[in-house]
Amino acid sequence: MNKRAPKQKNRKKFAASSFRNVFILYSIISFMAVIKRFGVLKTASFTGLYLFFVGFIISLIMWLVSKMVSNLLSSLVSSLGGTVVSTNYFSIIWVFILPFFYGIIGFISGLIFIPIMNLVLKMTKGINFDLELAGHMY
Image: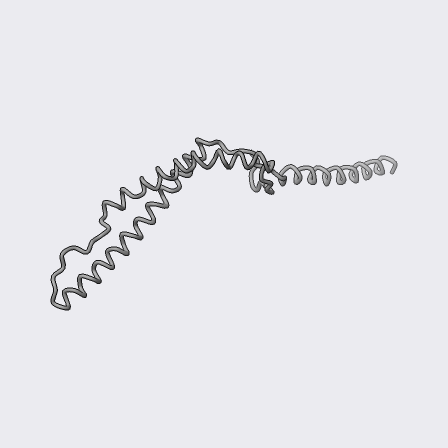
């Protein structure tokens, strides 16, 4: 009987220590992080690429609206007995050209404004955010 009593005490210690380990592991997984600066070239290339895709979507929407309006106007003019010269103001070529303008402007604006943002982050001592790692730990 004396041999079993120490095993129960060890089990209690193990249970308490495992709870402590889980708490420590949770505090490692969920923590407060601070953004102190952004890499200028990397973030500028991200904004340029992001605005390239945004420009592509916007130009597609503009092209579709332009086609609908031009078809509407041409049918309206032809129903009144007039002749239609050309009402296609936004051609398909702009769908492929406009995203490059958006991307170039996004890259240049990133090069200009990210150092300003880094200066503001330095003056305000960064941005706090709560970061929680979920799933696998790498």
